[in-house]
Length: 146
Image (cartoon, rainbow, N blue to C red; front, side, top):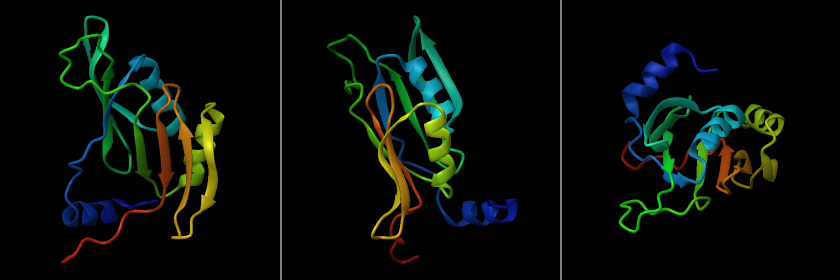
């Protein structure tokens, strides 16, 4: 578990997340509930527009998050992403706990919890919309010049 002191140090040395995966959902409200219940995302904001989710922000407790909204039947949709076509890798210090939570919530596990050849402990699951989620310890390669 990260202490407050460790979190402060990380916040001072690593820029806040600036890349936010964004996607559409056929049933955005059900997907939000699933991502919160099965994986542990935190519902930060949900904006309703005529009974549809115009925009939702779900934060990952360890940093970053995703944005999503209801699919629109509009040929001029500025974000015409197809539901179920997203794939996200989420960094976590405890993939086993996320895996246990996902299994308990009935998530479809598509790659078992295992250790990769590059040393990451991770697993993959599919949400009810068909999006693929991988959770693991791989934090990426170190930045150059830092």
